[in-house]
Image 1 (cartoon, rainbow, N blue to C red):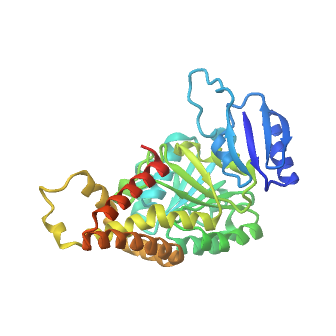
Image 2 (cartoon, rainbow, N blue to C red):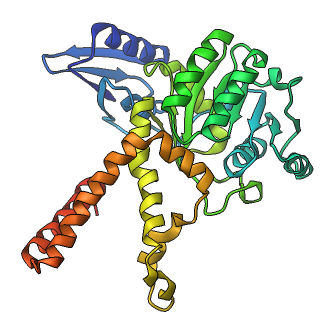
Image 3 (tube, rainbow, N blue to C red):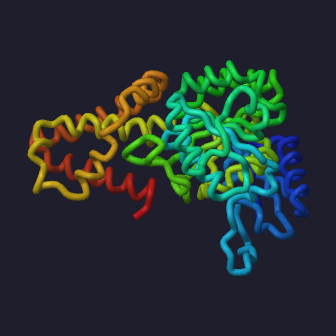
Amino acid sequence: MIAILNKEATEDQVYELAKWFEEQGLKCDISQGDYQTIIGLVGDTSSIDPELIESLDIVESVRRITEPSTDGKKHRLGDFEKSGVKTVGVIGLGLIGGSFAKAFKEHSNARVLGLDIDESICSFAKLDGTLDDILNDDNIGECDLIIPALYNQAIINFIKEKAPLIKKGALVIDTGGLKRRICQECYPIAEEYGFTFVGGHPMAGKKFSGYKYSTGKLFRDSSMIIVPKDPTDLNLFDHIKNVLEPCGFGSITICSPEKHDQMIAFTSEMAHIVSNAYIKSPTAREHKGYSAGSYKDMTRVAWLNEDMWTEIFMENKDNLLFELDTIIKYLKEYRDALKHKDSETLHRILRDGKLAKEEVDGI
């Protein structure tokens, strides 16, 4: 395996990365050139996750020279037994929080504590075996891992209020839809009280929300976005992989709060806005008998939680306005071509879109 670093990588960064590889039992052969640095890795690299390494800003790519031996078994993302987590606390037992609680209960030996504003949900979660007990001020200090699965502001409020009760050395991973404000406010609180706060965003969901729709399989093979304070702390990343192993994520993406919010404006928020606007056409009321897969794909996320999405859209309005201005610009091109009967331009911009799809996702 080789790791190719870009020219911006400093000697200290190269040293720290090489040191981390050596801690994993690998021998490093470093070759430095004018435009890039290559770290050749010798040893058993089967436990190395290329996507994890590539998430570092200084790394351009990671390539395997030979495929590692897995004895016919697919390598799993993380090893929960190595995490040292004995007790997990989940705050907010909706679709996401309930699914986290069920994943840890079904796929680990951890003790699972939970809390929800609806006390009947907590009682039911105990009844169905998901929770071992209700999370409260007396036992929150027993949690090695805490997952606040709440709206953005509620996450911040929870961290501020409960920080003095959280165990030193505990790991807190939130699930909020945006990261800039949450991380800005929660990083210093965690540092003050001696626990680790990491921004998190599981890229999974369903049409319907609520505990009754939660499942321990919700996150299987999906991406988990991780936003740490130190984007070069590979030991922390390894620990997070182990901690989240029971959830079955297919990959972990590491980025800054700013990058997260920029990308989510495009990949998630815009899809909800466009879908929500599209369904408002008066023609939609007559779609039955005329619609198929395209209609279903376009309207799936039009049915949304307006309270949650209003908060998210307003908080991320700078990134969202950029994406809205961009799509409005391109939609005007299609409209103008049709209005002026300009088939040549219409053909060109349709082809441009097709080629853009090929370039971005392939066919």
